[in-house]
Image (tube, rainbow, N blue to C red; front, side, top):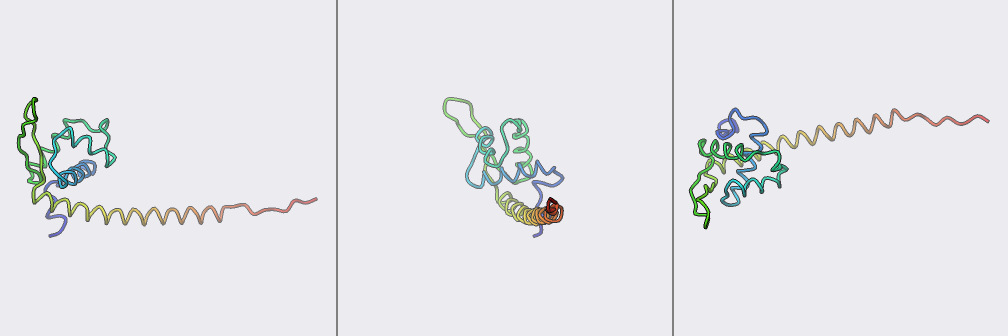
Length: 137
């Protein structure tokens, strides 16, 4: 199975959306979660609660469920109203594996680019250094 065949959860999505989806898949691979808890947990991946609207999160969760990457069920939350709890599906587990493999390959390329840039900068600094001229007395 190649990456193109398994991108059901991410087909046609923007990079930021795909990253959010990968983060949610990872969190839900570790256990079930509901919106506000997931929102807090996303901070470990650099997604701030200020930058992500809760309605965007729920829209993303619904999209992922529609695509078969997540499942949900209603759970009694104590004295408050029921809450929708999400869990990763088998399709979501496969999707996460593919996403991580793709990210690792992309990260490797980015690392090589940064290393090449750093080497070029170092060479540029070395060749641009003015040579010391001896002062004439």
